[in-house]
Length: 319
Image 1 (cartoon, helix red, strand yellow):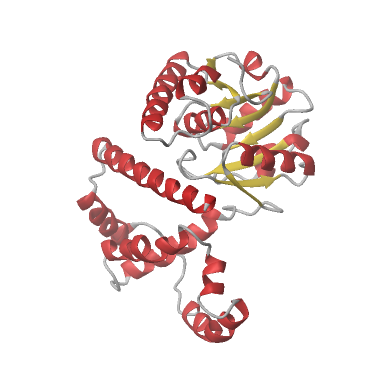
Image 2 (image 1 turned 90 degrees about the vertical axis):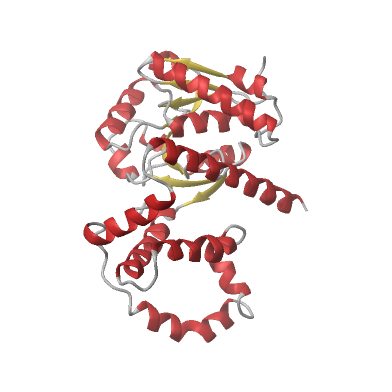
């Protein structure tokens, strides 16, 4: 069966993120080679992908225009790195979040890839300068940080190394759009990128509010899920400001002083440990005990909700 897109994509690492990326690329009609060091891990990943895709097809949430069977036929595994990257146009690295491990993989790739392939990392915390500096192919390197799970949450943060060529950023952006993801460009690297900087700012204040006994952990989460989260599922933070007054300038005129006053009362960065950690952990475990069975069941429920939300967003975009 011929893929609908020219060129092969390689996914390095067959964990949850790697599996999800493989599904996204196959959904976009690309031939995908899934590389890992152990054959058993690849076998397990392919079984998981097969089961997921068939279920997605049943629920009408399979990405792309190809059937599950055709998409599955585009994905194959390999334990030979050199053979896997042969003829690849794009390589997405998805190994565990350890700098030395990722540097080792990119060091190996550096010796065997050509001057055309894009070398991309899924890292959520490691800066491109830490990962790619010193590589012969540094101009071809970029971070494409997905949101977990990438199959249901389309955002991808594109973060270039200072030496990354503009064409690499442009081509990665175009590829992400082609496979149905929502890429955003960062003009330079910054610790935490954008998503985690915003997330950590919210987590930090949530931690302080619970720690100071202002609100219970359950109610704090309700403020997000039934308050801010409902807004932000469809429009961004800045557009929310724009719509909540007669435009952005009017919003700033109205709320500038109040925002500055409140922000000045924020406390120091929490330690995320000790009594408050235990208090929050106990509250979370009441709803979902922290064992694999309960956590996996809740994750499956979350993914189903994300699927329904994705369906709704798709419908809204096409209206």
